[in-house]
Image 1 (cartoon, one colour):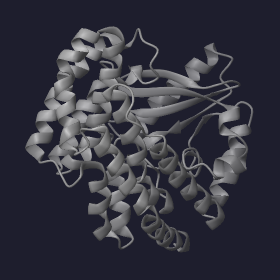
Image 2 (tube, helix red, strand yellow; image 1 turned 45 degrees about the horizontal axis):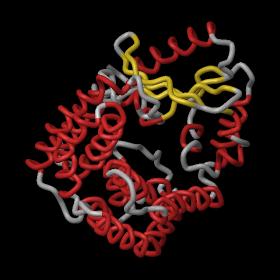
Image 3 (cartoon, helix red, strand yellow; image 1 turned 180 degrees about the vertical axis):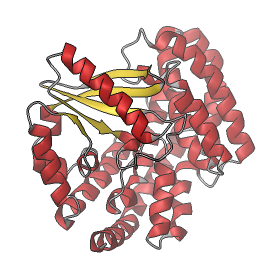
Image 4 (cartoon, helix red, strand yellow; image 1 turned 60 degrees about the horizontal axis):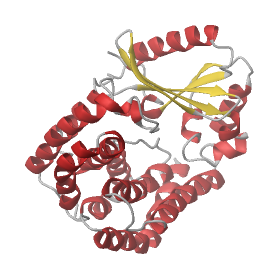
Length: 342
């Protein structure tokens, strides 16, 4: 299916939902399809992300198929979006408004955001502010790292801020940050701006130097079984990511990771494999602790293959990454200058 066809399905779903739900005050596309041309092919492992705007705090409706298209729908409040200046300075929200991503806009407020953000997106002042926000997320996340709590919680606390480093050159290069494929996107940006030689260091901050493709396939196979067990019970939990652990979300995790491995990006695939493993174990620990203990060795083996099997090793890796940030800032500043200059 083409991206344009998938977007049209999403638009129909949003408009129908808005007719029945007067609390929806706007909607726009988010995620990896933003900025893609209509004739691009949408991979089977990709979804179409939509954000519904409400006058209140946000949340996630979940992943589901509508007319053959996998949608992921979440909500966001106006307060979370903020003013046009807030959005321009946000590495999370600004990319969504650089193009015409608005689906419905009964109040006209999204049009204002779209106009102002698209006009100022490449302004060096706002680029620097977004880059600073990415760096701050890394620093604050890794500073909070400790060795307390279950393995799945410790791993999530380490792997997400670690992976945000990949978004530093991406945001500096005016590219849209992604979640599952963030390392692939970082590799593209670094190569495009003359810093291909820095990518190995970036990827090693995640995996310590590499996990072979065969071993990654073993970890994916183990994850698939754990995923299926967690998916059977996740819906009844209060975890924010429970919609990702569902039958609808399985192609994104399993098939999407297999696609990366097949394309030679097996080291990059380990990021989302480990994230999903940790989320599965968080769910199982809450509702099926016996099964969680039985399945934990598979998860622990994947973490160990990244070289961070202990709290001491995770702290050491985190400190090394924090120490490298000034060097990465130099790269990000150079990328931003070239990107802004066009």
